[in-house]
Image (tube, rainbow, N blue to C red; front, side, top):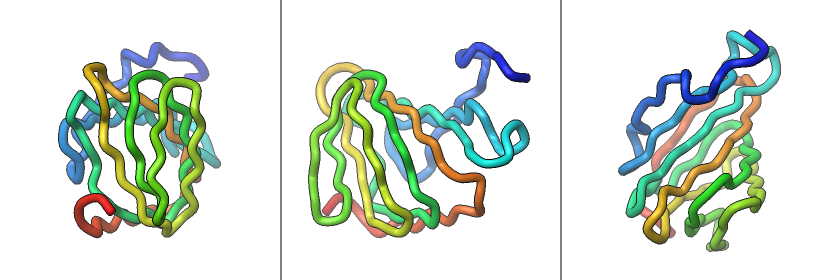
Length: 120
């Protein structure tokens, strides 16, 4: 289906994270090259330090977060864009009183997530 309401797509908890849900808005069964996902992290939510075997391109929709990318820690908010190369350790911590929400585009290739431990 070329158009659908995002709210019609079910969300699922992110097993490695706390207070974080993911929607696969466009998956590999709908598009041949890329998947489009939306992550919603509740205040106080996080995702631990981990690596993926695919790169990530992200666009922040709302809220604020600290993100560790390799050895760098950045603070992001609405309209920021984030690039995370394949294999680079990264982590997320929601900041403030509203949910942190972002879109994440990844190639439709096999991905392996490896949890490395808590931040930094």
